[in-house]
Length: 446
Ligand code: NDP
Image (cartoon, rainbow, N blue to C red; front, side, top):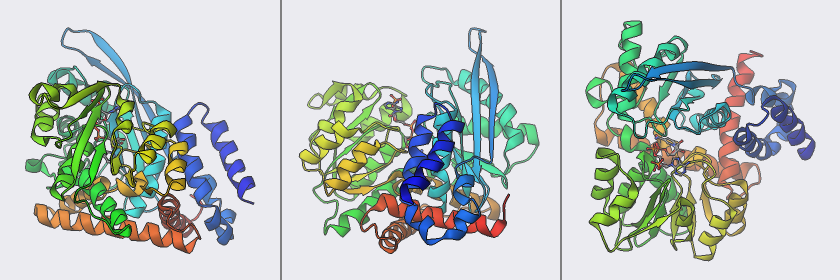
């Protein structure tokens, strides 16, 4: 039954979504994991739950024209995929990066459905973005672009319909410009975006949440092996929001982060990365990671981002982008003694890399569980907006930790119940799917 079921779902998905290879990859992983669930629940098959869950409820593609500082007109393509609203309004980030296309947004939106279900908060799955590259643009150019993007998006979103947030290339600056335009167009001041500034509806702890949550999740993975962070050497790819705050939390818990990267290459500082320098380069100057060695000459910079996996470490946290860690990188990590991998980015490990980790006895925390802290805290931001009050940093961080603990427990229990012991990939997919499937059953064929 297993092969026929997976083949029949994949045949339709591949036929309907031509060259969207990342989307095919994300769907295949989930569909393969849920075979034992579908076998146990014939009512899901009768109700066409899996066929429905792999098809977005709505996909919006739109033109985004804007003018640069020299008066030249540019046209980008914007996307919002509203994937599944069974357990709450659509929720998921916006990505601004030249590689964005509808397939990337579909894969991210699909993953988001199950991730959001795991958080235990009432949010459905969606994702959006644009093939716009904010790198090298002036603040005014970014503002005009964001205003144009929101001039179309605003009619499709709302605080009870769809609540976007940040992702690659969308940070506090972009969220500010997007929110300003939404407010002007609708004449409402509502929690329609998360990741807002602290003075205008944002939540303490949201900036740190994905990185911190990742480290809380991996803490549980290490505990299961009788270990903690003290003395662990850690390699983290990327140097954006997720990587920076994962680094901060690892350092607070006694680990040593020795490498970070961006799309040009990676730095290695065996004495431990000086996070103040990285934050100055990336958050203030919007510079490149190689500038780190100018201030710390004993550190090294190497061209090429994929080489980072050759740096020997105990724990690896891929936190840059999809498919950045392949079979070769995974084999290097295993042969160099890595014991745990936690995914900060979405789908950073290829299927071949995941197999290497699972076969090699490495504890592996998949993205939809390990990086769910960001969206969970976005849901906490929505709650605070609805109540029109603000919790302290300590309150938000305590709730985040509780949510990450609960996600870990759900993954372990689901894996146990369905005979996939210790496999957190299967556990995350099964636990997330079950919650969404039950809600879809209750709501009928819609
Ligand atoms: P940022 O834009 O803050 O940082 C992205 C980092 O990844 C940068 O260092 C960037 O380098 C690097 N990167 C991006 N694309 C590539 C590429 N094609 N090749 C190599 N390096 C690349 O993004 P975030 O930190 O927010 O997001 C990182 C990952 O985490 C993404 O997969 C995102 O979907 C995921 N995530 C983020 C959440 C959040 O709350 N922010 C929540 C959950 C998941 P460069 O500057 O050179 O492009």
